[in-house]
Image 1 (cartoon, rainbow, N blue to C red):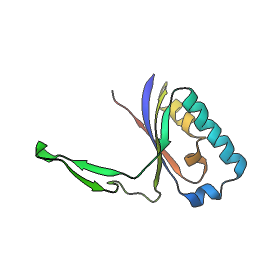
Image 2 (cartoon, rainbow, N blue to C red; image 1 turned 120 degrees about the vertical axis):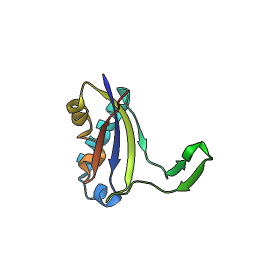
Image 3 (tube, one colour; image 1 turned 180 degrees about the vertical axis):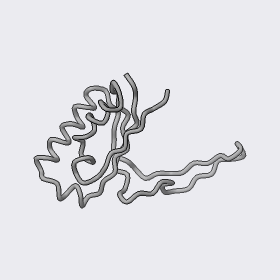
Length: 108
């Protein structure tokens, strides 16, 4: 099995305009993935960490990346291949509630 990092983007406005039965089904997909071993959770506030040239650690509040939607959550999933990973996350809340989910193959 291959591992994939997932990043879900979405905002409350998109979530709120999604039909309740769609949201309920999406939360069921999330729960089934966790029961199958996926590690996932909602994103907290980010902190950037730098230690250029191993000369000392500095931190800065806020994200380094920028996007049209805020980061809503992260996951670590296992799937047979990229197509299977895409199929797994296609029904999750960010994917169905007018957001997006990125799937990044983890090169181990």
